[in-house]
Image (cartoon, rainbow, N blue to C red; front, side, top):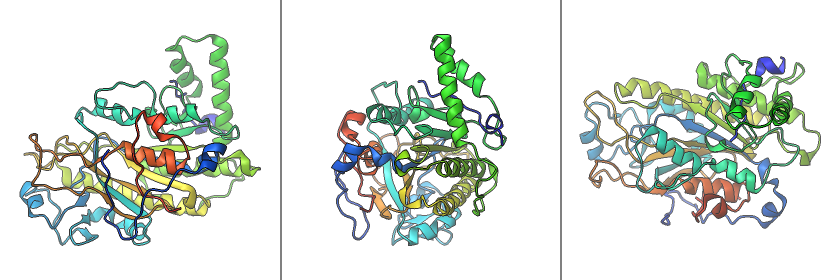
Length: 409
């Protein structure tokens, strides 16, 4: 497959303490001085999955033992007999059945109550806050991953800082990270030169600089494009756009891994960002969300299978994020409107599974009918930056956030 039939690319130009509800969980591990000194932490891969539109948390991780849940959701609440029970008060949406092997092997963590102080309920502004790791009243230009890579660049042997699949938006890699966007992984649309020149013309650089940057991206594409002799993965990937994105991500990872000849040369990329769209369920939510959660769960199961095939499961951390959650009370259109907190999933071979964070207390809604913030989302980022990569999370996030105790040593 030729590189220009494979990639549609664009340059990326631009807390209160709590304890998990899981037996055996301990304090978050300390950042390794050796990792800080060597920068080898980027051999640990991060896969971000954006649940775009704002997933409804209460019908995803269900407080089935709370009668207030069914009082607030007379039409769209998930019935107790249908839900997948995790403990005496918490269950999963039935469409998340494919996640049970990860849960039972204690490699799936669920962090409840995630948001930030004074949450904004605009899609555009709130995802900007998540992408830049800013406060609600703060406007930052660079993505939080861009700042991380500026502080400590990935090793020279890596093909790129990151790859964004299924979206043209660079998100946490915006404004400076050396990242590639695969806008249409199903068709592998070729638009490298156009996307690069348009992105750079907006910053009005010299022609020589345009050509230099494009050359760098094409070189990265060469290193990430599957080759004819590359071993084929045996994993059965789900259909649909999200399944196609996951297949592409694993092809990219397999291609970059097979081109590495020295242990110090890295693993191709430090970050892969995937997007699952259409969670903005203002109406007719039950069927829509069930289909989306099924895609998500099947995709996550395929990710684990493929990463295990590649020998990368133990050094991969998969984490979801979204701009916000949904309101606890259903609306008149059998849907839910923009809300505040939501649960997020973290999985990987070194994840300490279980329920973390703050479970919903539906009798304590605020004046707008929303749940209060339980866990600042930047604690998830601090876990990636500190324990996972060995970086100075406080400097990157411009404030100290306690990492979550989600990782095994």
